[in-house]
Amino acid sequence: MSETVTPILVALQLFRAHTAATRRLNDALQEMGMDTRHLTVMFQIRDGAQTHGELVRILGADKSGMVRTIDHLERLGFVTRTRSPQDRRVWHLALTESGSVALPTAQRHTSAIAAELFANLDSGELISLHAALSPITRDEQTAAAAPHESS
Image (cartoon, rainbow, N blue to C red):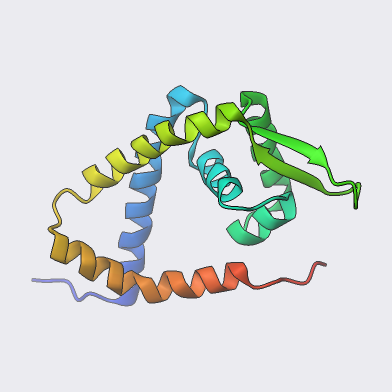
């Protein structure tokens, strides 16, 4: 007897896939003292996010969790914070030289895990999966990019 595929079953499979990918990547990044949260923040800083507030908005993260993540990256020597001369409440974030050197290693881990996770899919299946997920992720990216009113 085959199971009827419903949106909730697909959502559950996506959650399980995300959990498996995150667990495997966290294991690989452990040797660097990082996990996927740290890596995601470093990618965002590399790609232009400059402040804690921007990261919170882009990633949909909570403020205190983001502070802890940035604190950890600063202790690792991967990120620096400098006060904004225009607004003393704002800290500007930047990757350090060590952070810039660490990113390619972390990217190799990410690529290796992705290759393992999708090893059983041929290129046509990967293209179909990407196309099927694109409307969902496009909506999420649009929501993350939209300015939010602060409370």
